[in-house]
Image 1 (cartoon, rainbow, N blue to C red):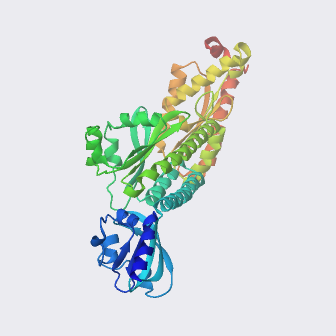
Image 2 (image 1 turned 120 degrees about the horizontal axis):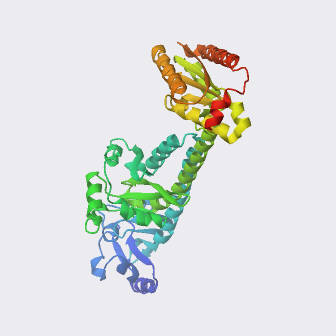
Image 3 (image 1 turned 30 degrees about the vertical axis):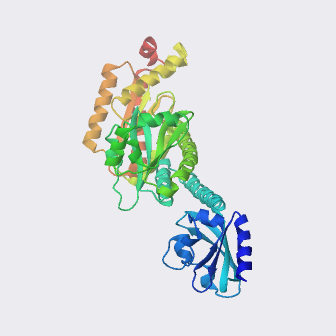
Length: 456
């Protein structure tokens, strides 16, 4: 029987799979084929015979969790998957009862499934990453304010990837500015510190960014010989690993997103996540910029650069609800029709632009509204009446003494914003009263444009 068992077991040496036989009760190894001896670094049978299987195969001191022999001492076959920490490999184990050299034994075959498990983990990581990116994109497009959306995305992606920090840098007027940052609980924020530093490492990154690639450093210590300045900066900020992904808008580098200290086992796949994320962030940045431009065009007078009638209607509503004290001034050009008739509309446009430029010298451009062809309204919110009166007098005196402009002016002040509509009516009425007086002196309504026509 023993001779036949030995002969049968010898056949297992022909197979390139790990096959071994253990005592079903004591877990002692009774046989290992040549392949398993090579895999488990056993050079001769004397190194395993009589020893516990878990000692030889896993360098453990106790029976392995999920072991078929532990589960079933007798007659049933079973199989299970396990990770062998000694070898750093995954195995699919198949277990069968048998008699071997007088022992109730278990024949086990262990098939290396490490590659399949790697592919499975990669697929799982890819699915999870896709779900995370989908959520990040949803946040970007569901939040109307881009800055707020980016804050939320960094908080989400930083938490999902279990990093210490997630942040954004933007190139602004030639300077590198840390504009957004999320930190894990207990991690010291670095945004203020980084804004004060001229980071020397960026020039090294720029070459990588120009290739639309991601900078991935899994161990900062390895930078010391080749990039000592970068190493020093990162060590001072308690960064041991990091990922930086560029932001390009219309082919131009505008900044980058970064992660500090992602888990060591995820650094490699984090790079691909960040590369995809930056694409959607830059699209959102472009949309936000376009939206701001459209809003600017919608609320700005293209010819003079001051606010337009749409902005006037919007702000009147806002001030009425907020109820700050407000001063209102109406300015209306006299004689503009004569300029247009005698010299053409381009000359008339120059008169309008000149008045706008004068008003900007005394009021902020966002306080000035061109509400008609030759009519401007100024609203000064949150101003006290004496200061308002002084600003009106200064502007009117300058216009009448230092410019050729002929302008009718009316003004009013209200203590509370809810009375703003009445102040607007009163200022408008005062302006028309002054215009009426002006044209009563200049019976020919075109006469007021003589001086202007000569100058424009």
